Length: 440
Image (tube, rainbow, N blue to C red; front, side, top):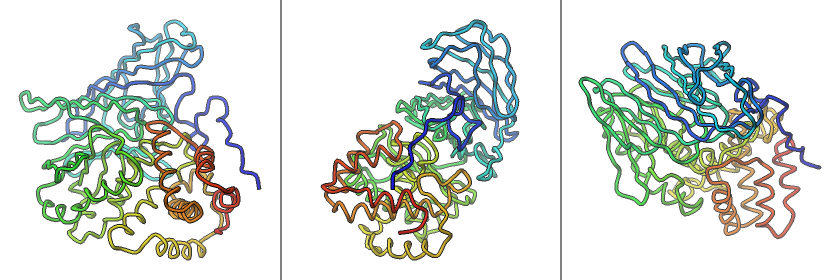
């Protein structure tokens, strides 16, 4: 059986899973956000400066931006836009003069409003008010809920985030905190995220949080959480240094210079979520029982699989979730729980009893976050591990995280790389696990 060709998106569409997202006419190298947020009235305002390069001749272009936010001014390369309009989640900008392909483009957008989550196939996504603060849960298309962007995981950029808010609150955003200064009742926080990052992985967390650093390790691990949850956190998240040690041993060096931060909100969250260098958990994941330890491992593993090595299109999300799910099994194996073989047998039985209608390499937008993608992806990796043997398998994973560090990849890239680490053909394995719907 021949694997289906990985088709390029049709003209004007970056990704058929999110056909309204992104713009193929230009790519972005840097975002600079200079914002103010007033917690009590949920008011966000400021400017976004976007450094980009045109990929084709442009007379106009679009940015993704929520209709809950209004734009007051747009300039391009220092000149006012000929005109702009906001509707249906797009900021449409007409240039004062055409730009040739390969031209530099600096776009400044002044905007503001009352941000709210975007309603999507997958529920509410993006900027969300908490009982006392705010969070951003960006996957897969929530970045536009709080800043104008070319919103697709294949368009990675560096970020500078400056945010002013009331001094009673702590702000956490991606990258290194380079400045924090109080003025009157406000504090201005500035973060630099130099590593190329997909827009959905950029986050903003605001709350009445205490900050602490975990035991000193080669990778800096920090936490921000309500003071009332400190003793539960100290128990539930205590083994994160050992997780980092295991994952760096198996997957290669931790990919971010600024380290890793865990945020625990004072509110309950349905599921934890990943961002670049940050994982966000609800108070319900921090109850003193260690019941969420597998989730803690899962979110940490995303720093390698999903955040550093990112799927070029959403159809290949198994490269994120299957790998992070398998990391849970590897942590269980190392920490005294069931080993990966036991967990694989358990989840294989469960998958065999579910509908056999999911194609792992193209689940469709409605099913891309289906638990079967996570578990079948992990089972695929376990089958590969058994065929390659441990030594070759883990060398392959490190090769994968090194070659595609801070960039994008597709399933065929992993297949081609795996072939270099195998003495025999892997085609039957791929045909059974990736390109057929029935569970092998």
